[in-house]
Length: 155
Image (cartoon, rainbow, N blue to C red; front, side):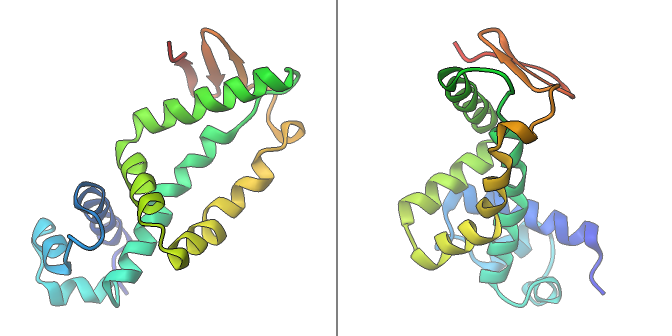
């Protein structure tokens, strides 16, 4: 059974490489070299490059859900402003996510976009329901407050 921490470390290294160079420019050998592994040992954790890439995308993209939390009790315009602020703040703080998202949108491979829609973004549909957002989430021109603190507003 593969060690979960090693598998996560491989996906983190792969995410950095895929974000920097793109899927087609990164080989399994590149990822193995980054991890100081042989390519054969990488296949112990992942059967092929596409599986590694898809699992890496899920790992990276899962965190975006926090950016789609909408505050309760505000107008539609304020909700949209807060959503945009949250997404921009998330993207600015997560350059690997941003690069991978832009690469996927630019490449436009229908099968992979369907995979992302079905495995990652489908879970966001339920999170964009203001009645289900904890009352601790608020948004203002100064920033937005979550349970983990205050994120500054984007000027």
